Length: 471
Image (spheres, one colour):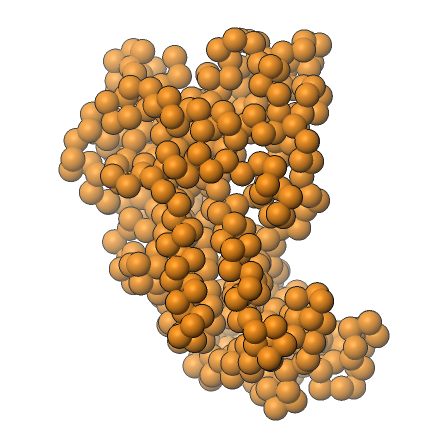
């Protein structure tokens, strides 16, 4: 996870304080979950997917079989928050190591092997932490550390940099620069810096390491086995890796496909408990069957419906989202009808809702008003609608070049409820990635985002004032 300060958990009672509670950050702590989590959203979305994930995770713990799963859904649907709930419920059995793709990797040019190295560094360092800090209180054995160090024996420059890094390791880390543990810590520090700025790395280094990938997986598995055993002895727990933000729009789709499809064997062979958040579009692509996660361990968190399939208002969906917002701010800060307008414009997505309300609240504050009015809501909706319109164009992160005519045609078919339009194809993949198309509850049907309905109506692809939009 990206590090951040804890959220203010008291609801905002003034427009000037709205931005403090409407941060687009996942709920992490027990206090945040207790203050802000709205169970009603799960109910209207078709059930709590995390309970199924928990069941399989607990079974894996009992059978000592590595658990591997992916969680998918649009950004802002609450994947990281749901994972926080899951981790709180399995806390007696699993110790999590959460990491963000945008924090520890170079989003535009990371390589599959980088993720493996991050896992190795994180588990070794976490295992060495004291028990009261979530570790095992013991370092991996010298035999395991020597294997890691020896794997880089032929990389003279890497080892020299690692030795230099070891010199700067603080005494508080419990290592001397001339010890094996100190050298490995220096190696991990060197690798993390290299991985974070991967675009500057030499191509021959990448290619050489990939030719030796099988041997590195073997080294990693022995390290993971030992670290898990140390944690079980200290806390009766297993390590659980949670890789998040792999669905961020700034990560090219070819990076994701190379990691989870071309090099899927990394995760298939790794003896580690793993949960990753992936782009929703990948789940519906032709390559989805090659993902290293079984069908019953691929969990999609659907959107919260603002309309049903006939474009009639879904009062339960709107009410659930309003309740989530009420936990963060006094709803009396809205003039009549403006709250509902912004909820509908968000498409039920809390990240978008917070962006809309923050924009509207700032507008009201600038004009020194005490409530969000119609003009403030108009400005916020127009601003976000423009963003959605830009996303309908060709994205540099789409694997295929798809013209707007093809997208508009499929959007109209989806709006009209045509069954064949629900069948995944590259166009639907692109629209899901752009968040123009939403997926809803247990019936698994696709709908057009309300702001995109507005756009299609304005372009006469739909009738003016078509139901299901914000007008």
